[in-house]
Image 1 (cartoon, rainbow, N blue to C red):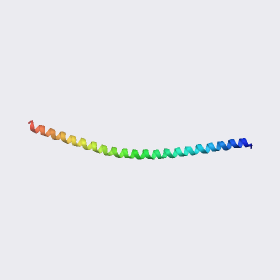
Image 2 (cartoon, rainbow, N blue to C red):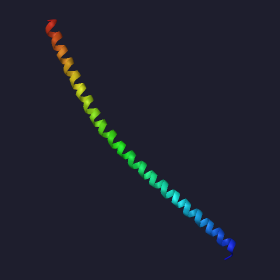
Image 3 (cartoon, rainbow, N blue to C red):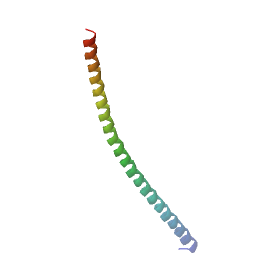
Image 4 (cartoon, one colour):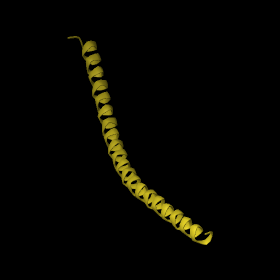
Length: 78
């Protein structure tokens, strides 16, 4: 094999190794980002459950107050 051809192959191999290294580094970054996104999603889901519980509580309280107002109006305006 000629020296020139060997140098070209050596250069191409170096580029390939560099590209693979870059892809692996980016893959690690993506894995880290995905892990962070999953953690955030879990926090959002937890907060959503608590939010739904709060909304249900407020709706129940509103219904109770509406009932109480209805009873008072009924008794007062009889």
